[in-house]
Length: 242
Length: 121
Image 1: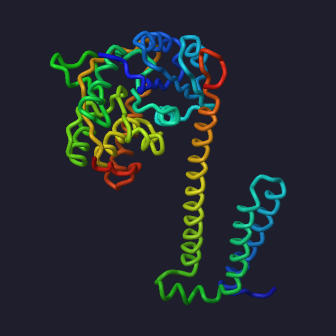
Image 2 (image 1 turned 45 degrees about the horizontal axis):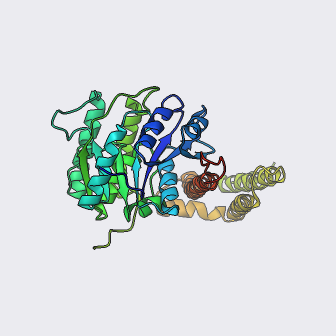
């Protein structure tokens, strides 16, 4: 598979100085353009990313992964990229699979391609705690109910967003916890954008801890339940028919 | 000592609270702790309370219509005003939060650093 020059790899990073260098090196070695959005890190994430050869934009304070992604989407749109692949800075996503996401987006003409941990035949490559599995099942059921599509990995942070959805996300994207995954997927599908999954196994984190604690998960599910039921999710323009 | 009716006492308390509110807001506005916009809003509310105290005699009648004691009528009035202010402030804070996030994102994009030249992208 060939690298597309119209694709930007966006790596949102908060205090990921220990792992971001390896991720950038891996992305760069595959030939992709790379942008690290340093979301107000208190460690050396910015300098490490710069030394590793990535373009870096830095938030002066921590705004959350959704805001970091929106900054990345804006950068991509302003610099003429046609699609963005989001890749975590903790080394969980296999950068060798970026090309598969992009290829799928191109060939199948899909607006949002999600790298799914649950689509491959040999099942899950990493262990997910029970409470998170329950949350994911509820989120998946909600998307099926509201948008009439089946998405198994509703919280995957490994995804490819293509125009015209990219411009919509650059303009309007949720900054709240996990809003960048489930809510974005739900809103995109419900607004007529095509969404599909591609099997992508995931590795364990290289360093640090996940932000998805049980309490945060409960808070999020309560908030997203209310938001979905009351129609309070963020809004984007409906997809124009080709 | 002059004996005051309950309504007159309530009117005096209302007027006193209104005067105290206006005085407090003027004080904190002079110390630049709140902007003129919010100071004027609170002063208006204080003045409304003072003016409202002149019509305290209507409160028992309103209470009878609503099936409430005069004290409950005043309490409900105060709660409604405070809830209105709280909602207005929530709208204000949400807007500011959005503006702040946009400003931080824009500032970050304007200062993008490219590894090759160390300057702006």
